[in-house]
Image (cartoon, one colour):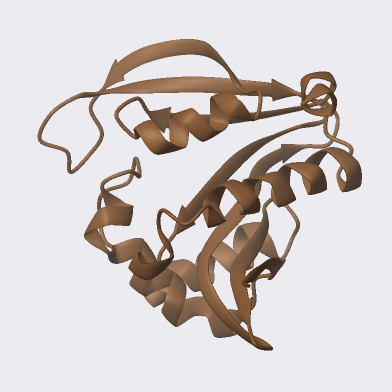
Length: 174
């Protein structure tokens, strides 16, 4: 049986992040449709992860003692005064999709956000047609606060975006 872990991201994860982030099935669910370069990822680490503005982790699956990276999850835009942050995740390995790993990793990072970072609220934004993600978020207690129709650079058409929030009190009830 597989066990899921999350661990802090390192510079050695750059190749996987770039590969995953640039895959069509990941990119189609991101607001930024342009491809990511290794240099851009390294700048992200330097300016956001290392200073603590973003807490980013690698999602790994362990089978028979071997850990395989399959994606990433994070809390970004952390506001320590307001005790808020923004959640994000993507599973980059095609073989790992649809197996419940995204849901498990989301639970891990939300526990971290509320128990370790002591946030009072976590928000996210998701395309409404990303039905699997929307289902998981609602199941975990996220509530839709706003709906907007938006067009992002590189997209041919506008899409509906759900802005969702989860309060610590609601998380503790789930």
